[in-house]
Amino acid sequence: MKLIDSKTLLNLAKAYAGETQAYTRYKFIEYGARNEGYNALSEVIDKIVFNEFNHARMLYTAIQQASNKTIDNIDIATGYPLAEIKIYKEFEKTAREEGFEEIANLFKMIGDVENCHKMLFEDLHNQMSTGTLYKKPKAVKWKCAGCGYEAEGKEAWDTCPLCKAKQGFVMLKLQDGVC
Image (cartoon, rainbow, N blue to C red; front, side, top):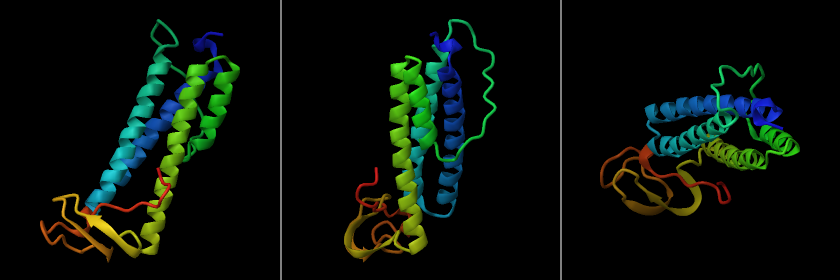
């Protein structure tokens, strides 16, 4: 089967559209965090934004390989879940069934990364909603992303003692096991 005639091509296009949506969605979150003074949080999210950009790039590259001719349109009228993990498993299965092992592996690996993103966002949401983003039950090392100053304690400082950066510059402590 040729990629241009496959359901896998349609799934690549759906995944590409979903990744570009995720890129924009996370860029909005990063922008909001930065505007609220959560600089360290915005830096974490910015890495995810870059991941989503690269996912879209890889998917688009796979689409371009489907034909030597220009592909004018791929009709992908579909709903888009905000969590992509489930659809990547389905897309992987279809690609394997159609004999596109490399694309199936691409879907699998992107799905694995998306699962890490999910765990990271859940951890950050939990810390923000429970007030533990800058407070921990045991002393930890806090580091200023602005100047590199470090200090141990159960709570991060409100203002860096060295460079006077606001608390939002304190690097975040993620739950063990979060990607």
